[in-house]
Length: 294
Image: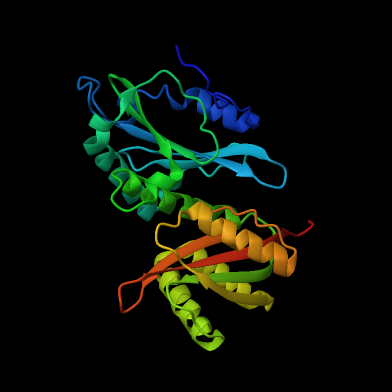
């Protein structure tokens, strides 16, 4: 019996009817529906990823879910609504979905059997592997998966690509304006303002080359002709994403009375670069978005 489809173990997560309908059938897909024989109990024929999040101003817990199949089909489902389905019609997303399933096969020994499909608490991520022998799961803190060398970090990045594709499609139906762009560089060495501006510009150019959503945001910001604020702060080795977001939260609050409520891959982006001495530097980009009345 499947348990806990629509909430965390200790937290009630608000979900839309659309999301509940999708999740109710997400774990019942048969291997034959995606062109896989049911005779091999250990064959991965689908992967579902959930990430637990929190809306800081309201303290509301929510989550995003994505899935991928060997057919190339993929979809994006946030619990508050606004799904993007049929992503397999986009060749780049279809190729990534097939790669996710292929990579998941090698990670199968690190998963456990489960009948608990609860959504994760904020800050946690879980991967469900669908096999003819049953559903298996791997759960961990998001910060741990973002550290170099974690076996599941590649799956996280690959699903991140599919999410960016979904965001691009959803943006066509969103009506918002960019109120400003805020850039915080966490650097190993202190930089003067002129050096800092050149460094963050170079980091932005590199990120645009590999992230289509960030490139789109930069183009939208240029067209908006709104403000840009750039600042620097010391970077300490071992900083997690939560640490870095905390530094940016304080900067935005103290300097501009802005509350950071980031949605990574939509309005919040991170790019890491090493200097000539091999020291790590991190640049955070936050686009302050506001809805436009219809």
